[in-house]
Image (cartoon, rainbow, N blue to C red; front, side):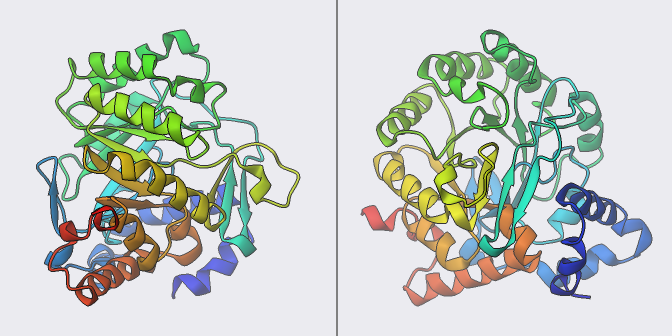
Length: 352
């Protein structure tokens, strides 16, 4: 049965219940359907050397990764890899388990192929997640740990939460992502300051030699975003992810003015934000593009604007797992059409 046949049934469920059902089904894939992983791999994995990259001394077989938020507790690593992702991000998770914000907090905007979420870093906490990751790490594709602070940790103590997670997960991931840009933890975005970033990266680099990425919000003033990114790079940030969900509620036609918007509604906003910031920093660091990407064409434009990698999340919900293969196949074809022999030749070409 194809995802298009299953999707109407999933949409009859509340979004969180549908996600829980998908998680349960994927976790049981190896046990319920012997050989199921092999079937998915053959169906969804696309492999072409034109897309292979070595970044941070890690092998990326394609540039399409899963963004944080889908596999919060690192319970779906193996089945997600069978869907053809080039890298996987687990989290966002926090030192202590927390339930997140009050429900309802997750909404489908079906006609716009978008999502509005106010989850609030709901997760089982670092100890439970560490046990889940230990079952799989090291893994066949790079694993990225997306870390955040607990809701009840005041901002003046936030660095302690992040440093705790750096210490406990330095041997349980290939890359870290510092999430200080979610709109769903009160005052978290206030940490998008040069002072905090300086202190955090200085301390983190004393703990781990794993690459550390900074994820920023698309609602920042462009000049402020450029300044923050340049400061982060000077503080030894290894990459910048642009961008998290948006709180631009002018994009929606409902009365909910909370949570973050993802998907097609923010495609243009995220693309413009990425381009304006990237043209100032693309030759100084590794850039990862995220936000409203659901096709090879959209991914290719971000790559030409400086992205080495891209991430999806909402596209997976509306288009199903085939979207990963479609993007990778399409990227390979677009690169060849433009006379490129390797993806690296296209990165930032719009600024050269």
